Length: 80
Figure 1 (tube, one colour):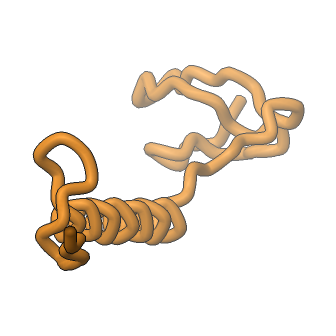
Figure 2 (cartoon, rainbow, N blue to C red):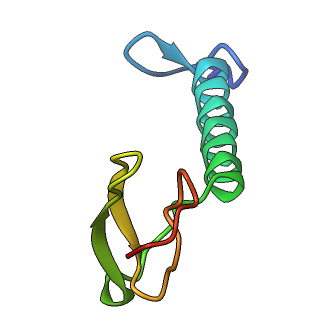
Figure 3 (cartoon, helix red, strand yellow):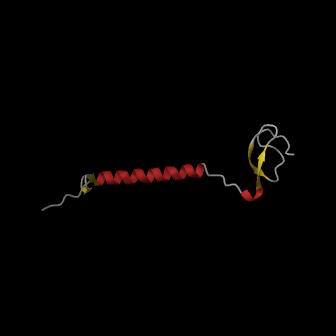
């Protein structure tokens, strides 16, 4: 009785050792790619404590702005 230990050894079901290693490598490559993309495009977190909801009378832009802001972010008209 000899046991063949090679890349074509069946680990479980129809999955061979070669396929298992390929899936593992693909998983880690995908994981690293996701981490890189998340580092390049981080979410901007707004400190809601210092923001107010604002609707511009001139361009009708609406959204959160700093309560210390003096101009509309879209049309740059002074806040009244």
